[in-house]
Image (cartoon, rainbow, N blue to C red; front, side, top):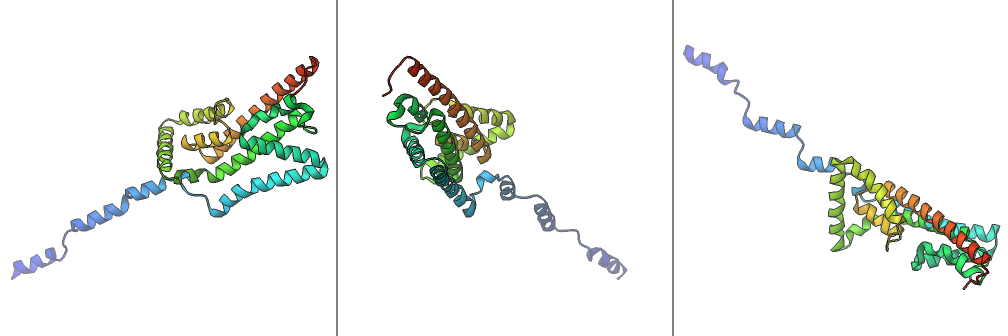
Length: 238
């Protein structure tokens, strides 16, 4: 009987079961889903509906408001010519419309100078860059093309995470791409390349806008020099 009495306290305190140890270790170490959600960047999360709407609508409203202000404080003719130049630029002529005043002269542009056209392109492309930033993630929802763009963006971001210098060069490379005269190297092309390269919306916007400003300045200076040379040599415009 004494032996049984001594055994009771020992049996009343059993060792912790393996199930409890396993559950506690699981609670401490987060699973893959938690790690993936913690690694999400703002570019991986769809824009809020209100933010997207503002990015798509406000630039267009700003352009219309600018056209109205030019009509009020300048002349209706100048405002209409600026609107026509913007439409021609969007339809495919792009930045080359800056040469319009130098080549076409008074036959098509009675109120706009070369630098007026450069300002039109600068403001227009800045507005379009904002619009593209608000709609860039929608490209990855296109059937067939979307998954390819998503994989490319994630691979580029993984490379930039292990090699920080890649992101810096990607930003500069995007600006050089927009500056270059390559086909599709405008605002939309540059925005798409920035998205695939894993750059943030802000980096892409800044790179595209800086490159666009440089292109407009170079085109304006060259077009103005061309117009001066043509006038000096008494060459008629088209």
